[in-house]
Length: 250
Figure 1 (cartoon, one colour):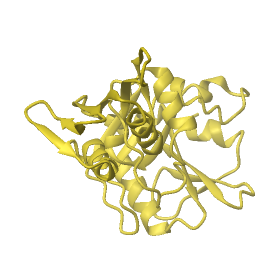
Figure 2 (cartoon, one colour):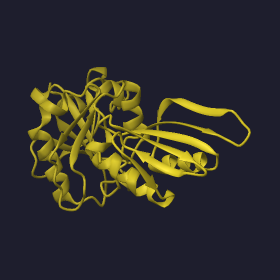
Figure 3 (cartoon, one colour):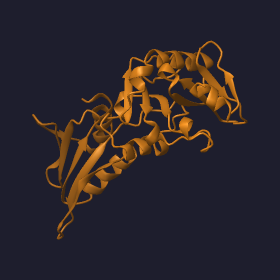
Figure 4 (cartoon, rainbow, N blue to C red):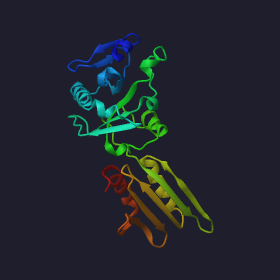
């Protein structure tokens, strides 16, 4: 039996209209519907979640796009991203897949381990959300604890790795030199904490592994150093600058 047939023996499925190899789980989910797409040569499956209000036409476009790029998406190690996605109602530009061992979906709840071990997580997103060098643990966090992938109308949640340090008046330097991945709100909070001190710095790395370091001095102010020139920055400009740097690489 194919993977779809094996899954269908455990989960009630219905063909998704207009797309060969796409199936919808027949379950009472008032907010989110789960779909499965057949992977290359029928040896794997992609799971796609979408809120019930998601436009059917855009679901169809995404499924067809995924089918066209199924081999690339199945090469997730542990993530893969294929750009060029265009949806009428949503701003996503990239199809992102996560390796089965990182997604840990197990749609049959262990009743058919051969199926559970071959289900990729797949969702529409943005290139800036993945580095393609994630560890399996980072890919798991991206898929299971990151953006709400069923909400196709969400804003991007760009990858940001940060290290920082600051020195309060009359105190030693406090340094966080092990990069951690944070969201934009946390990033802005870090800047605010650094600027409460007399001196400090923040180093941010985006999805292309390009880095920018910003230094803070209570007398001299905030300086954005992108590697070639130092640019004085108004603290109110930090969020839009970070947004541009982490979503476009500039």
